[in-house]
Length: 248
Ligand code: 13P
Image (cartoon, rainbow, N blue to C red; front, side, top):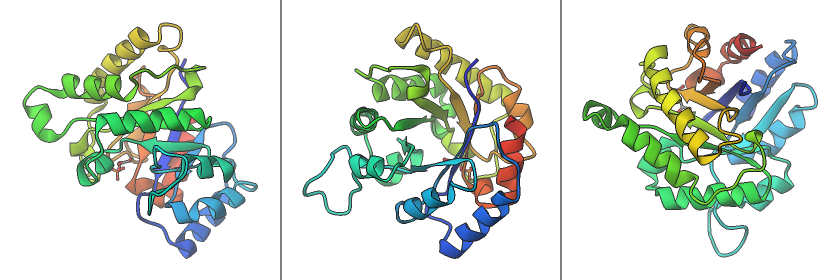
C-alpha cells in the first residue's frame, strides 16, 4: 500500500506571528504516526524547521530553481534548501504553470535537480475546467505526468510523490467528488506502473483542490487516493490537525 500524507501548501500566506500560533496549537496535539508536511514561504522555512523538534512535521518548499547556484537573481537553490534540511519541494503547481508560465520541460529539470539533492519532489498535475469540459482531462494529466517524469529514475517508491490537483477545484470550494478524483488517480496509477513497473503501485498519489476536514474521509476511502495536498484548510491549525488525524 502506498503511504498516506497530508501536505499543507501555505502558498503566499502565514506571517511569523500566525505561524507561531499555528505551531503552538499543534504542540498540544498527539500527532504521531503519520506523514504530515508543511510548505511555508521560503523565508519561513528555517524557523519552521526549528519548530519541528516539538511537532512531528516535515518542512518543504513550494518551488525552487533548476540550478544549484549562479547568476539567477531572485531564485532559490535546491542545494541551499538541502543545506537547511528541507525535506521536499512542491513542483509544477498549477499557479506556477499558469501565473509564472512554467513549462513541462522546466518542471522536469526541477524534478531531476531536486532528486539529485535527495529531496522529495511533489509533482503537481491537473486539468483546467475548459480542458475537462472538452474531455481532455486524461490527455492533459497523463501528458503532464509523463513530461514531468521524462528520463527520471527512482531509487524507491518514496523518492517522489504525485499530486493530482484539478485547477477548477483549487481555492474554489468546489472539490472533485471522490469518484471523479479516483477515476483520474487510477489512470495516474496505471501510468506510474508502466513507467516504474517495480514501484508504481506504491508511489503515493495525493489529491488537491478544496480538501477540508468534512471531505477528507470520503476521498481517502478510494484505493488510489493516498492523502491530500491542502491549501486554505492547512492554514488553520484545527483544520490541519483534523485532516492529519483522518489519515492515522
Ligand atoms: P485549496 O485547498 O485552497 O483549494 O488549494 C489547493 C492547492 O492548490 C494545494 O496545493
